Image (tube, rainbow, N blue to C red; front, side, top):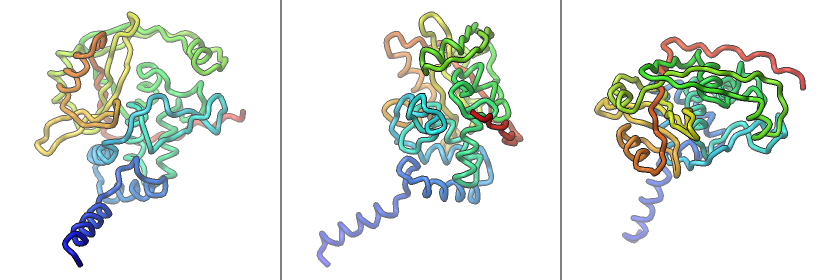
Length: 276
């Protein structure tokens, strides 16, 4: 065998041995990966970090999930391996880490995405503060304090204008706690692997969560921010994320919410799916 052929063969074997990232997997391969992670890593926090890192490089795509084929208001699917936005990345990572098979992952994903696990655009956890965080208290606990902002949520108007769906839902007002940027930077080192960070920004004069990511530890035990943001999933120091965000004109960065992973997690059963 010639030297060039030997080099090419070695390169091919090396490429073949390189493990796939999740976004390169088929559902069947992802199911096997989920089962292996459950067997190999009993620590949920470490499993969250390992699964999240196996999606580094996943392309970013905004607003890519819906209820199809359960509902036909759009044609967006109920899961995505190929791409993610910030919330899709976090939800898929948590659901995979809590599961031992593809089937359990898909069920858990919907339990996270929807209030009581009832599938439908009207029951999806659209607003992080008053929907997602509240519905997933079994998974994470909001540990934010230091400042606050008021929220005025009109779900009926949102569903009508964004999804062309009519629902009679009362308007909700709430007050949300958060950490201003300097306080969040000082407290980031107290977070544990698997905790969630929510970015609070000001949009049109209103505070709201506009981005989310996960906390992971590097080999020196330093906390880092793992998240899906254009152009792809990345891991970086928290201060680098803040600096890059603040460098953008009109970034609106106000602070952060810190949600801590609960110590003893039992995924609750879903409510019965109502007949259409």
